[in-house]
Length: 227
Length: 227
Image: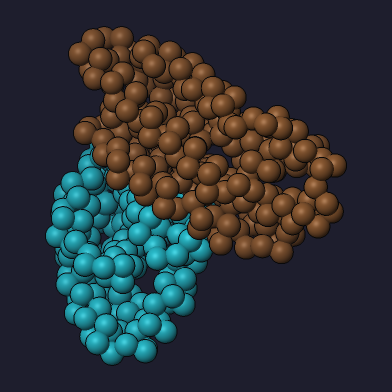
């Protein structure tokens, strides 16, 4: 709500919003590295293992850039990231995959929701901030890879498909819960999005939730699963 | 023993030796990625986590190059790598770390022994093969990193130091066992080293074992631990 805050408040909020945003980006990138590297270790064949390992490595590329932005704000990237750790640990504890396919679907769903969250909160970032965002949000090819790997299996095995659809619903509930908790625990994120014009004044997050759910439904549809 | 084989034998042996060597390099690089990525996940702070994640990512750099060399030999890198998987799984099963420090020492020891094995078997590779080897054997800074992280802890805590020295002896026994089993199950490796003049005719591997043990002792000494 530009214009309704006094200057000091605006500045404080602006700075902390940027730092919380940079921390969120750093955290999501590192979480993606960890998930993909762990999935690689469980992959049923070496080619898939190496492909996932390479995608994991690619997720780290933006961290140098994020470190610099945090420093420019007088902040420390790792401190900014640390505020997000607990929520991911909870997610992992609440969604133990039963097999390789459930593991793959879990990462696919969470990766998608968190990526959409990053995108939605940064929608209105100006030209100065775009190069960093392009780094952070670069398409690693992960979504296409999972669709190519899992799509044919889903199409061929109705029983597995039904189980994974059910699993996908459980996982997305938890992933949307992460997004909600992240926003609740880091009000600077919301202020940042609002300051950039990406959130409407008075919006309680309903439109963001709808965006995240729509993105998820589109991704599950690509797998041939019912959201 | 150049000159004592007939041409066909030489060629067959030479080709399979190169493929087994490339498979070994690919396997060690991927194993290093997996170990470092898993250690990263267990790291006690975010800065260490990101450093280890970056080092893990660096271990993959040589795989493109190895894929090409395997293809030039009419072989498939992943098939060549697959012959080494079981031995690493065994190693992991036999050395479950009890805490973060034991985990760090385990990777440090195994990483060192396997790196030395790669180096020793490739000692006499000619100029054509050097750029690839430089990629594969590039120093990731991992050894220095562990020394900087663990050295002061070892120096300050005699009880932990004694426990880790004991653990290091157990782990190196298993790591040298890997090296020995790898050579026994892949006679092409030894033929490759001999063909390059890196192994003496009649050498039963005793000098290699001595090299690996000496490298290990030097690395433990850098940590302030007794080998």
